[in-house]
Image (cartoon, rainbow, N blue to C red; front, side, top):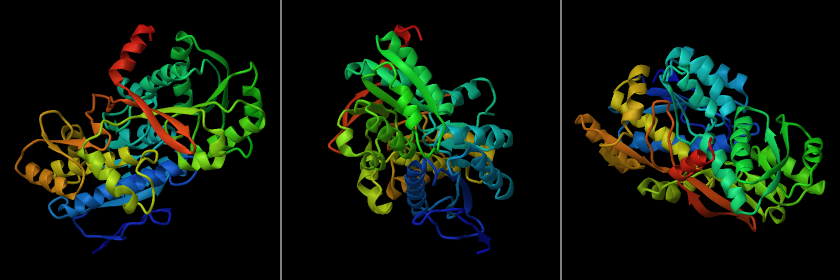
Length: 418
């Protein structure tokens, strides 16, 4: 064994074996292990590790293992670019998984992976800007994601808010690409559906206090707060809102259905908290993941933000490398959409299913990975379509109230003239 693979800035419990055989393939992983999105990244990194374990146990790429080189973006775009640059230019990683949040994935894409022609798969970056970059020919076709764009989720959230009687709201949103785009899509639909937005207050991340933002958002006597945030900052904002006299009624974005957020705010203040997130259409992969992830991850719930779709990102990358048969960025890029394309033999999560996939690929037969989040396929911009989960927090627990299909949301957007 000659090649040393270090998991830079890895948190306890995320470290992988340090040494890899000469034929093993290093996959670059850039995750938000610390910072405002740290909870997402920790869950996501363990999911990818689980997918790679299952794949390697199934035989890997002709006996060669996939090895994660995981870097912490610290939830910052400039740090993410530095780490991705090292992975691509120095470690020669032929594919990158990450980031989780759009404000990390976008600079990695525009500064590193697109110029280098290295495929990038994000488990949870939902900004419409990523679609626009592809449409404008700026991605070199390398970007894929296992989450639905906020162009649809904003509309779904608006309909859900109206349906739950949240008809006069204030908005506080993180001032980055994700937050700005989510609010744009939501506001357009919400006002056309008859809702009233009393104020929109953007905030900058990692402030010690958000009392000023919470106070400003209370102007106009809103009946509820739409909080577009991440669990750490979101909890600070929600506490400031409540302590300042704001009504304990909330609409929340995907990823805020978080145990850390609920415990930090106080479950008693969140019994009228509703939210949307990219949903799932259960498959055998869903059953496998839900039954095995918590034990593998040392106690992280399979419902943790980004956990399910991160396993899928890891599985799709692994199967694409197997189909490519080598650590070649162009071959992997071409294989990523092929391993989920219609017409292939259905493959699910877990060692036994990956053994089946590897056998089929050796025989030159097509496969179709059906993921934890459901059946996915990529369009020409690397986007997927899927349902939206409609949820509520009640007595400290997140419960699913229903689901809104992507077709339904698309029709609603069209009826609203969007």
